Length: 65
Image (cartoon, rainbow, N blue to C red):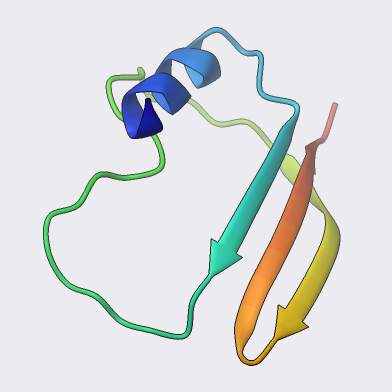
């Protein structure tokens, strides 16, 4: 799962919605990106909704077609 599964889904061009949460923290390290193992690609997403709670951001993006 995680970044590897996201990479497979992105490469198959089947991601229509993306929900991202942003925490007000800075963490270091060599953690995985949102996708791994996928070829270089770019899919335009359009912001559909933002919710803020105590400094946390919860966002929803839809595929721009």
